Image (cartoon, rainbow, N blue to C red; front, side, top):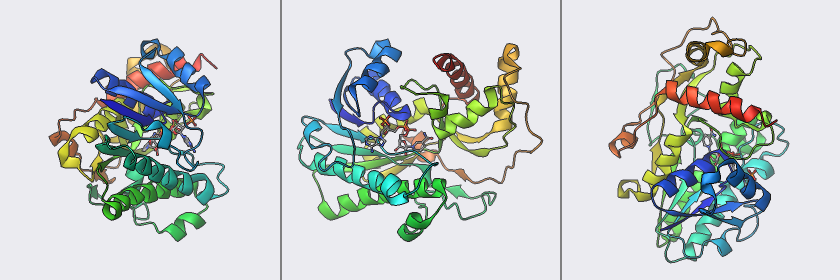
Length: 332
Ligand code: NDP
């Protein structure tokens, strides 16, 4: 069965392709340039000849995916701008591409009778209420929505808030599309929080790391910064598997799937790295004085576990990520 993966040269997209291939699916991946596709294969020679690459230069183009959806049984729509800095126009840079890209993927699916489900890579950003005190002990479930309004999203000068809003309105647009148009397929959203894990996709520099891996990189890049960031985490390889679960399971028809192995704290990262890589101690930040706060909000991942998902241990995630980041840093 053939799956269209949008944004296959991104951090998550590349891993989704790997998981799908491992489980016997065929993959057609959209890329913005063939150079990037070639770079993905150069970095991962085992992918040679395994992915059919097609060019979609910009998800904002009218009918962006119409010509590439032919014969696809499923779509994993992952391509979306993930930027939180240098934003001068929230609508043009974040909200429109996220929403329009999602609608384009769904409109393309309408034209291909074989499509059974469209999996939308949403985010915990579409779930959490970030106006609340993070140390309120709340447990989020698939029923929760980030309550930001469109007006607030357009006006905010906080890039993170605008990015989160782009995920809210893209996911809402997908659910509304299905309700209004009653197409021949259904959808399922995957909602990850901060994603860590080995980057296997093309990158321009270590500064182009995704926001979450940047947090981990700051603990091991010799800057000796002592961040005290605490949030929810998931391994990119688990997120990739979650996309396969979301594509298959009838329980997720027009639903959402929260995926997280639990809370992370940068001090735990420091301790894991200092123990595992004593020879690199000059590069590794010492833990900060700030204590872990057990009242930080969390999520209920029981739905994902009931669907058979297993999670990497956080130690394994950190160790594998650090090893790959040090290896990738040699490229630049
Ligand atoms: P990346 O930036 O690595 O990947 C984004 C992908 O989308 C890239 O392939 C990028 O292409 C493509 N893309 C972005 N904008 C456009 C556009 N206008 N037209 C065509 N393609 C576009 O980010 P991630 O892999 O981390 O994120 C992938 C998805 O996962 C996003 O939807 C993001 O919101 C979501 N997510 C990520 C989390 C994380 O912590 N990483 C957490 C929760 C959700 P190119 O590489 O050519 O720029």
